Image (cartoon, rainbow, N blue to C red):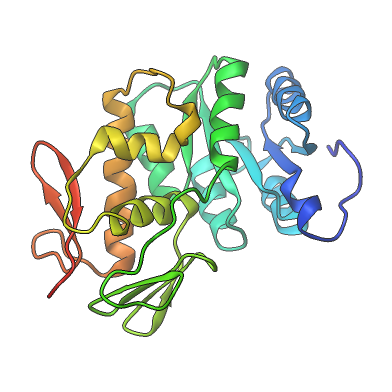
Length: 253
Protein backbone atom coordinates (compact mmCIF):
# COMPACT_ATOMS: atom_id res chain seq x y z
CA UNK A 1 0.00 0.00 0.00
CA UNK A 2 1.39 3.38 -1.00
CA UNK A 3 0.34 6.77 0.30
CA UNK A 4 1.48 10.27 -0.59
CA UNK A 5 2.93 11.82 -3.72
CA UNK A 6 5.51 10.27 -6.00
CA UNK A 7 9.12 10.82 -4.87
CA UNK A 8 10.91 13.93 -6.04
CA UNK A 9 14.60 14.05 -6.80
CA UNK A 10 16.97 15.97 -4.57
CA UNK A 11 17.73 16.33 -0.87
CA UNK A 12 14.58 18.30 -0.04
CA UNK A 13 12.43 15.39 -1.18
CA UNK A 14 14.34 12.96 1.00
CA UNK A 15 14.14 15.21 4.04
CA UNK A 16 10.35 15.15 3.93
CA UNK A 17 9.82 11.47 3.12
CA UNK A 18 8.93 8.78 5.66
CA UNK A 19 8.19 5.06 5.38
CA UNK A 20 5.81 3.25 7.74
CA UNK A 21 6.18 -0.55 7.96
CA UNK A 22 3.20 -1.83 9.97
CA UNK A 23 0.73 -4.67 9.39
CA UNK A 24 -2.03 -3.36 11.70
CA UNK A 25 -4.14 -1.01 9.53
CA UNK A 26 -5.31 1.13 12.47
CA UNK A 27 -1.77 1.67 13.76
CA UNK A 28 -0.54 2.22 10.21
CA UNK A 29 -3.17 4.92 9.64
CA UNK A 30 -2.25 6.58 12.96
CA UNK A 31 1.46 6.61 12.12
CA UNK A 32 0.73 7.98 8.68
CA UNK A 33 -1.35 10.77 10.26
CA UNK A 34 1.37 11.63 12.80
CA UNK A 35 4.05 11.82 10.12
CA UNK A 36 1.85 13.68 7.64
CA UNK A 37 1.08 16.29 10.31
CA UNK A 38 4.85 16.65 10.76
CA UNK A 39 5.13 17.53 7.07
CA UNK A 40 6.20 14.20 5.60
CA UNK A 41 5.14 12.56 2.37
CA UNK A 42 4.47 9.11 3.79
CA UNK A 43 4.75 5.70 2.16
CA UNK A 44 3.32 2.66 3.93
CA UNK A 45 3.92 -1.08 3.79
CA UNK A 46 2.12 -3.97 5.48
CA UNK A 47 5.00 -6.46 5.23
CA UNK A 48 8.70 -6.49 5.91
CA UNK A 49 9.83 -7.24 2.37
CA UNK A 50 7.67 -4.45 0.97
CA UNK A 51 9.06 -2.11 3.60
CA UNK A 52 12.66 -2.86 2.63
CA UNK A 53 11.82 -2.18 -1.03
CA UNK A 54 10.16 1.13 -0.15
CA UNK A 55 13.23 2.20 1.79
CA UNK A 56 15.46 1.11 -1.08
CA UNK A 57 13.32 3.05 -3.58
CA UNK A 58 12.60 6.27 -1.68
CA UNK A 59 15.57 6.49 0.75
CA UNK A 60 13.42 8.13 3.45
CA UNK A 61 14.73 10.26 6.26
CA UNK A 62 12.57 8.42 8.82
CA UNK A 63 11.25 4.85 8.93
CA UNK A 64 8.92 3.43 11.58
CA UNK A 65 9.13 -0.33 11.82
CA UNK A 66 6.85 -2.82 13.57
CA UNK A 67 8.56 -5.82 15.15
CA UNK A 68 5.74 -8.32 14.56
CA UNK A 69 5.33 -8.46 10.79
CA UNK A 70 3.62 -11.29 8.86
CA UNK A 71 6.58 -12.35 6.72
CA UNK A 72 9.91 -11.49 8.38
CA UNK A 73 10.32 -9.95 11.82
CA UNK A 74 11.24 -6.32 12.31
CA UNK A 75 14.74 -7.14 13.55
CA UNK A 76 15.62 -8.79 10.24
CA UNK A 77 13.91 -6.00 8.32
CA UNK A 78 16.05 -3.46 10.19
CA UNK A 79 19.23 -5.37 9.38
CA UNK A 80 18.28 -5.43 5.69
CA UNK A 81 17.41 -1.72 5.73
CA UNK A 82 20.83 -0.97 7.20
CA UNK A 83 22.49 -2.50 4.13
CA UNK A 84 20.80 0.03 1.83
CA UNK A 85 20.01 3.16 3.87
CA UNK A 86 21.00 5.28 6.86
CA UNK A 87 17.37 6.29 7.45
CA UNK A 88 16.41 6.95 11.07
CA UNK A 89 14.66 3.77 12.22
CA UNK A 90 12.13 3.84 15.06
CA UNK A 91 11.01 0.34 16.03
CA UNK A 92 7.53 -0.19 17.49
CA UNK A 93 6.25 -3.23 19.35
CA UNK A 94 3.54 -4.32 21.77
CA UNK A 95 6.10 -6.38 23.67
CA UNK A 96 7.70 -4.69 26.65
CA UNK A 97 10.59 -7.11 27.32
CA UNK A 98 13.90 -5.28 27.58
CA UNK A 99 15.57 -7.92 25.41
CA UNK A 100 13.37 -6.85 22.50
CA UNK A 101 14.54 -3.26 22.84
CA UNK A 102 18.16 -4.36 22.94
CA UNK A 103 17.70 -6.63 19.92
CA UNK A 104 16.14 -3.75 18.00
CA UNK A 105 19.00 -1.40 18.76
CA UNK A 106 21.53 -4.12 18.02
CA UNK A 107 19.88 -4.60 14.60
CA UNK A 108 20.52 -0.93 13.86
CA UNK A 109 17.44 0.93 15.11
CA UNK A 110 17.89 4.49 16.39
CA UNK A 111 14.98 4.43 18.82
CA UNK A 112 12.49 1.94 20.25
CA UNK A 113 8.90 2.64 21.33
CA UNK A 114 6.35 0.32 22.89
CA UNK A 115 2.66 0.20 21.93
CA UNK A 116 0.37 1.82 22.69
CA UNK A 117 2.45 4.93 22.06
CA UNK A 118 1.51 8.55 22.58
CA UNK A 119 1.43 10.30 19.19
CA UNK A 120 2.76 13.58 20.60
CA UNK A 121 5.72 11.85 22.26
CA UNK A 122 6.52 9.86 19.14
CA UNK A 123 6.45 13.00 17.03
CA UNK A 124 8.65 14.81 19.56
CA UNK A 125 11.24 12.04 19.45
CA UNK A 126 11.21 12.01 15.67
CA UNK A 127 11.59 15.80 15.57
CA UNK A 128 14.52 15.45 17.96
CA UNK A 129 16.22 13.04 15.56
CA UNK A 130 15.67 15.45 12.69
CA UNK A 131 17.75 18.08 14.48
CA UNK A 132 20.87 15.94 14.10
CA UNK A 133 23.71 16.55 13.56
CA UNK A 134 23.96 18.87 16.53
CA UNK A 135 27.47 18.45 17.90
CA UNK A 136 30.40 20.15 16.21
CA UNK A 137 33.42 17.96 16.89
CA UNK A 138 36.53 19.97 17.59
CA UNK A 139 39.87 18.75 16.27
CA UNK A 140 41.41 16.25 18.67
CA UNK A 141 45.13 15.76 18.31
CA UNK A 142 45.74 18.03 15.34
CA UNK A 143 43.06 16.89 12.90
CA UNK A 144 42.10 18.99 9.89
CA UNK A 145 39.37 21.61 10.21
CA UNK A 146 36.03 19.89 10.58
CA UNK A 147 37.65 16.60 11.55
CA UNK A 148 38.87 14.86 14.67
CA UNK A 149 41.90 12.58 14.62
CA UNK A 150 43.32 10.43 17.39
CA UNK A 151 45.50 7.30 17.18
CA UNK A 152 44.24 6.18 13.77
CA UNK A 153 40.64 7.29 14.30
CA UNK A 154 39.46 10.08 11.98
CA UNK A 155 35.98 11.59 12.35
CA UNK A 156 34.87 13.89 9.52
CA UNK A 157 32.02 15.99 10.90
CA UNK A 158 30.95 17.65 7.66
CA UNK A 159 30.72 14.36 5.76
CA UNK A 160 29.65 12.38 8.84
CA UNK A 161 32.21 9.70 8.09
CA UNK A 162 34.55 7.72 10.31
CA UNK A 163 37.74 5.89 9.41
CA UNK A 164 40.00 3.63 11.46
CA UNK A 165 43.59 3.22 10.26
CA UNK A 166 42.56 4.42 6.82
CA UNK A 167 39.52 2.13 6.46
CA UNK A 168 36.06 3.72 6.42
CA UNK A 169 33.65 2.47 9.08
CA UNK A 170 29.88 2.72 8.58
CA UNK A 171 28.02 3.96 11.65
CA UNK A 172 24.33 4.52 12.25
CA UNK A 173 23.26 8.08 12.97
CA UNK A 174 22.91 7.33 16.67
CA UNK A 175 26.35 5.74 16.85
CA UNK A 176 27.88 8.73 15.08
CA UNK A 177 26.13 11.19 17.40
CA UNK A 178 27.36 9.36 20.49
CA UNK A 179 30.90 9.20 19.11
CA UNK A 180 30.70 12.90 18.26
CA UNK A 181 29.63 13.78 21.79
CA UNK A 182 32.53 11.79 23.27
CA UNK A 183 35.16 13.11 20.86
CA UNK A 184 33.90 16.64 21.50
CA UNK A 185 34.95 16.33 25.15
CA UNK A 186 38.22 14.33 25.22
CA UNK A 187 39.29 13.22 28.67
CA UNK A 188 35.96 14.09 30.28
CA UNK A 189 33.56 11.42 31.57
CA UNK A 190 30.09 11.91 30.09
CA UNK A 191 27.22 10.44 32.16
CA UNK A 192 24.87 7.96 30.52
CA UNK A 193 21.94 10.28 31.17
CA UNK A 194 23.67 13.02 29.17
CA UNK A 195 24.28 10.58 26.31
CA UNK A 196 20.60 9.59 26.38
CA UNK A 197 19.78 13.24 25.82
CA UNK A 198 22.28 13.39 22.98
CA UNK A 199 20.08 10.82 21.23
CA UNK A 200 16.89 12.65 22.17
CA UNK A 201 18.08 16.04 20.97
CA UNK A 202 18.86 19.09 23.10
CA UNK A 203 15.45 20.71 22.73
CA UNK A 204 13.68 17.48 23.64
CA UNK A 205 15.22 17.56 27.12
CA UNK A 206 12.40 19.29 28.98
CA UNK A 207 12.64 17.42 32.25
CA UNK A 208 11.77 14.03 30.75
CA UNK A 209 12.76 11.22 33.09
CA UNK A 210 15.62 9.05 31.84
CA UNK A 211 14.75 5.39 32.41
CA UNK A 212 16.93 2.33 32.88
CA UNK A 213 15.87 1.21 29.40
CA UNK A 214 17.13 4.51 27.98
CA UNK A 215 20.49 3.94 29.68
CA UNK A 216 20.63 0.36 28.39
CA UNK A 217 19.97 1.73 24.90
CA UNK A 218 23.08 3.87 25.21
CA UNK A 219 25.05 0.84 26.40
CA UNK A 220 23.92 -1.18 23.37
CA UNK A 221 24.78 1.65 20.96
CA UNK A 222 28.22 1.99 22.57
CA UNK A 223 28.76 -1.78 22.35
CA UNK A 224 27.94 -1.67 18.64
CA UNK A 225 30.12 1.40 18.16
CA UNK A 226 33.11 -0.23 19.84
CA UNK A 227 32.65 -3.39 17.79
CA UNK A 228 32.63 -1.43 14.53
CA UNK A 229 35.68 0.60 15.55
CA UNK A 230 37.54 -2.51 16.71
CA UNK A 231 37.85 -0.98 20.18
CA UNK A 232 38.14 -3.60 22.93
CA UNK A 233 36.22 -2.57 26.06
CA UNK A 234 38.66 -4.54 28.23
CA UNK A 235 41.64 -2.72 26.73
CA UNK A 236 40.19 0.39 25.11
CA UNK A 237 41.99 2.31 22.40
CA UNK A 238 39.59 5.28 22.50
CA UNK A 239 36.36 4.75 24.47
CA UNK A 240 36.71 3.92 28.13
CA UNK A 241 33.89 2.93 30.50
CA UNK A 242 33.84 5.03 33.66
CA UNK A 243 32.12 2.78 36.18
CA UNK A 244 29.11 4.29 37.86
CA UNK A 245 29.20 7.32 35.54
CA UNK A 246 29.31 6.71 31.80
CA UNK A 247 32.00 6.88 29.12
CA UNK A 248 35.12 8.87 28.29
CA UNK A 249 37.04 9.42 25.06
CA UNK A 250 40.73 8.92 25.71
CA UNK A 251 43.06 10.76 23.38
CA UNK A 252 46.44 9.01 23.42
CA UNK A 253 49.40 11.30 23.92
